[in-house]
Image (cartoon, rainbow, N blue to C red; front, top):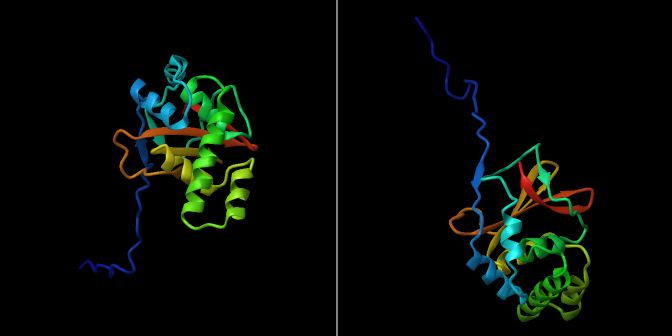
Length: 178
């Protein structure tokens, strides 16, 4: 005779499935649209830059992250690489995004001094990253300690631009492969 234990006493076995998110390279038209939002000129070098990105899926964690040779504490250098293929537009991009962020905070009733403090920050916070993802209508993934922090809408990936970065020792870099 076999006596079955109650469900509460049975050992639970969990299957650990690594979650992956699909990753697609953007089209020229998406890159042009982003440049228009950022008030910068489109360069074909941006499309060439994206050609160096080799991964097709974005895992929630990865130990084998290969990044671009340019690393900077200024995340806007990475955004400049994504949208122009060069670093030279980083301050234009930063000004456009920070100005839009400041304007939105003030329009929502935030204290001007508080909005100015966020505007004057030289480092980005979670608030900045959430705004950047919303402003650009994209997903931002930042690998830190091999795990991804996600900003923007990751539930519906269809057609949504994904900007995948690494943050190590206070430096941002574009992820090329994993």
